[in-house]
Image 1 (cartoon, one colour):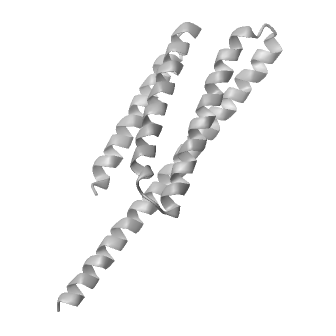
Image 2 (image 1 turned 90 degrees about the horizontal axis):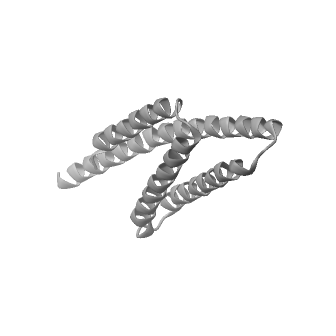
Image 3 (image 1 turned 90 degrees about the vertical axis):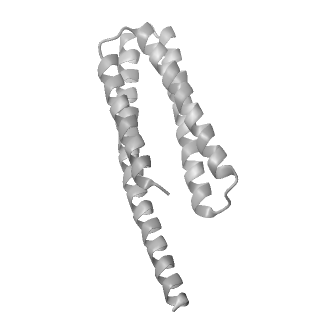
Length: 143
């Protein structure tokens, strides 16, 4: 497994996200809605890819990670619904509270992403250790 290329792809994905957020900061609501719709489609495609990869693999670790992805996708769907509901808000106090809640959700999502990266690091190091140990045992068995 080529973890380095996977991490490079993750880095590119984060860099693309940073660029998108910077560009979106100056856009109007219609442009933001288009970005939200596009991001939702991309998130759904990524979730389907993960489900497809883990669907054939049985095991507790895979199912827990798959469940975390499903939970994250449900949260993304909830965020999209909230964004669509904003159209009907007419009270500025409600809109302000909604904006604060959305910022809190974004902050929590970033914290979750950091946590996921930390867990990926541990999982990768564990996989490398397991491979090294397996190789050591195989060499020992050959001698």
